[in-house]
Amino acid sequence: MPIEQRGVDTIPEEERTSSPKDLLSILLGSNLCLGVIVFGWLPPSFGLGLWPSVTSIVVGTLVGIAFTAPLALVSLRTATNLSTSSGAQFGVRGRLVGSVVGLLLALGYTALTLWIGGDVMAGTLARLVGLPENGLTRALMYGVLAVATVVGAVFGYRLLLRMSKVLSIGMVVLLAVGVVAYSPDFTTAAPPDTSYLLGSFWPTWLLAAVAAGLSGPVAFITLLGDYTRYISPRRHSPRKVFRSTCLGLLVGLLVPQLFGTYTALAARAGAEYAGPLVNAAPFWYLVPLLVAAAAGSVGNAGLMLYSMGLDLDAIVPKATRAKATLVAAGVATAFVFVGSFEWDVQSAMTSFVLLLTAIGTPWAVITLIGYVRCRGAYDADSLQVFNRRARGGVYWYSGGWNLRATASWAAGAAVGLAAVSTPLYEGPLLALTGGVDCSFILSGLVGGAVYAALTVRPQASAAEPVAAEPAERMAVAVEQ
Image 1 (cartoon, rainbow, N blue to C red):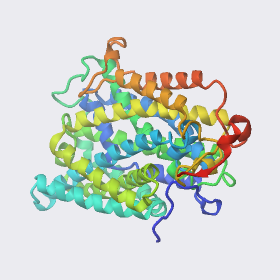
Image 2: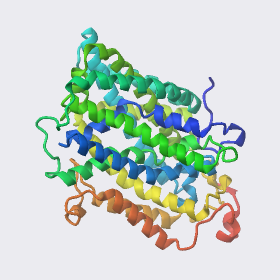
Image 3: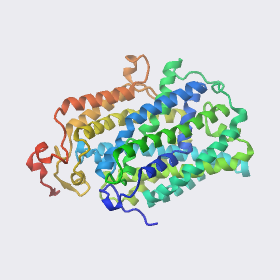
Image 4: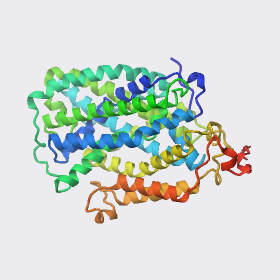
């Protein structure tokens, strides 16, 4: 299979051969991994029992899907990734906001997947063959997973799609067997020695809904376009693509996360997940657990690393996608080592998802408002101006930046960060929200409201480029 040569350039119609079923396979297969399963452990680690944990995950996931899934339709129209597509609202240079947000999201989730997968592999091998469970063993497992992940990500979309199709079946079987394996020890009570993280039930439940449920779909706000850009709108309707996105996110996230809750309660996993998960597994399930940790981690981290390569390629147009992917892999692996040996996993996970949600939500809201305003009509050629190291086009705005959109995003992100509540940082607005983390809602509302107020007139679209922009912005000249 040849290495994919496409970066964030426009995918030609003849190469857009994927289908909504392929999208469903990717969203299901790539999420059936420990990097997603571990989020199901968060509610019990916060002090919640079975049903509060389940309801927080389900409600958060449903809200997140309703917000995230429409973004899949943007790249269906533009034939490029979502960060580049956001240039229609932010400007061809301002789209770097989306590239940086996407890079940070993918970086964090890649590192988390390698981290948890490597820890479970090390613990499983310790029980199976007596391999010392120490820092050196864990470092070796991280390295093995990182190398395998790089191979999949460098080869690109087609290989990752094939892997996801296999994983969507194989991982379902492994997790189903896991339900049986952990059933003798299952309990509906919260793990011992855990109390409500935020002191009372409802604030803790809301934190779980955001950190464990909502964060899953929000992780895809810049990723969905990586897959839908390969689907042709001439052969597949937006409705089918939207339905496949919703179903893929719903099943692909709820199945592993609820498995994580189930195993966390069975293993009495409070402050840590990987160790208790391995220790509570019956000996006959250790090999399936090892396979699940390795294969699932490579599948999920491979797609995340692939997205990181695209975002870095968008930031540095001179870099090829393959080279950008290798650089991104090195940075992600470094984060794994730092996180494993220096950070507390629960605090690191919770803080990461809440902070990135606060920053990413207003960007997604502004991008969706732009999609609705232009009715899905984009000038695909103008979106690529920055990649060609040129200037001009209908999305040039002011030096390649739409300052109003950028300011709107900054306002939303600032409010979101001021309203966030994490184990490592608490924003000053929490005094006004009763200590409840409302960062997702406030960041989206503020970002969207400011953008709508500053841009009363619809943004430029491919259907009306001359009327929407001065004639001089239509000329494309090579940047000196």
